[in-house]
Image 1 (cartoon, rainbow, N blue to C red):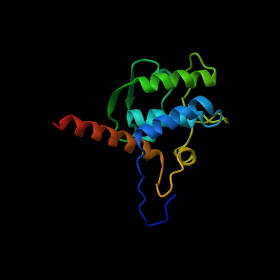
Image 2 (cartoon, helix red, strand yellow):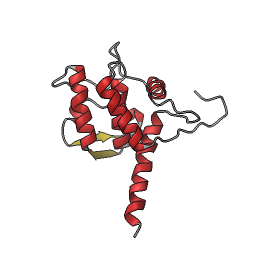
Image 3 (cartoon, rainbow, N blue to C red):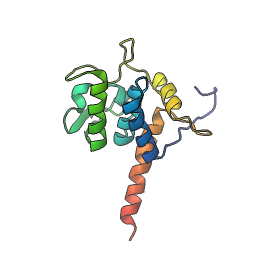
Amino acid sequence: MSVKNTNTTADYLDFDYALNKAFKLLKNDDKKFKIAFLAIIGINVGLRISDILKLKHKDIQGDTIDIIEKKTRKRREIKINNNIKKAYKIYCEKLGIINSDNYLFVSQKGSVFTSRQVNRLLQSIFPIKDKNISSHSLRKTFSVRVWKMMVKVKEP
């Protein structure tokens, strides 16, 4: 939480670092695999945390995510890439789920994660000195990656 009357900004992560670390935690850590999967989704689709937390299992079982964004009320169709498909398969194996209509990110108590909870967990899996890591860091990481890819395409 920020101090009153001050601005805080989220820093972005290196995409490859974040993806590799999240996959490693997803496969090997029985306590942090849920936040690792959330990080994989966040850096690959660029949705706001409010929209990620609304996702249900049925939303990502196809080839696209159809969502109406909470903030803008705009409808978006997002292609699900291989990173998410591979991670979702591992995630379901960890949860022991074959088919479900439940939310993707549910705590041990059975409630959907909160953005505050996500921020705390992200800071624990990405403890980078002098960087402010939060749920918005995932969106920024996605944006920086897209921007870098666009710049590469334009270079002769």
